[in-house]
Length: 138
Image (cartoon, rainbow, N blue to C red; front, side, top):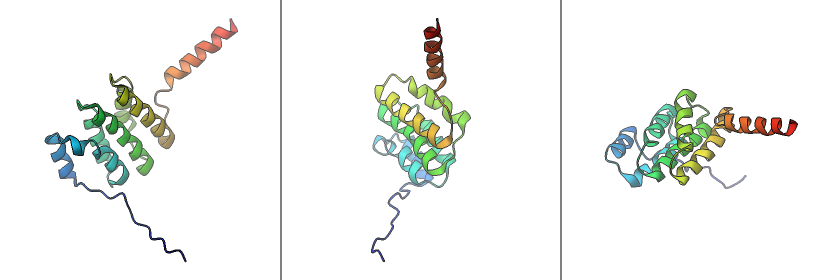
């Protein structure tokens, strides 16, 4: 028998009230990690989604970037997100002025599409592919 013992290394360090308090106080040090930590370990996916949506509009680009990563981790660990809420946030993040946020958003879109079976952000790629196809046929 193996001597390995499983320990849950992803424990929720924050209560819901502590999360809202950190948002209210604009505690940058805490806000940077909250969406990802919640996505890994919070029992309520809807709460995690709500926090990620809220932080996606933060002035700090690192917090905005990590907020969209929160969607990816929630999709990965819970398999549930509300498309009508998450999709517009991710599409907006893909157009963010910050390259960091755009990069995080693209990674999040890829992960969310994979885990949720969605096709966010594929319309433009499909149109470009169709355009190239029809141009070759001329």
